[in-house]
Length: 60
Image (cartoon, rainbow, N blue to C red; front, side):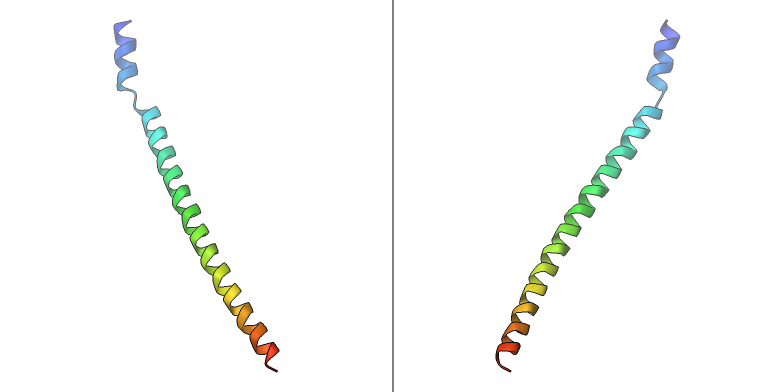
């Protein structure tokens, strides 16, 4: 019984899988945050561009 418990304590394969899972989760959060910021920036840019086009059309 003692050897089984000692072998279980030395087994690190589960810890490695958990570490890879945490890294993947952090990368996913970073990508989602970046995509959201980029989307907001593009939205404001196209809104401003649309306003300028409307103004130019009204002045014609």
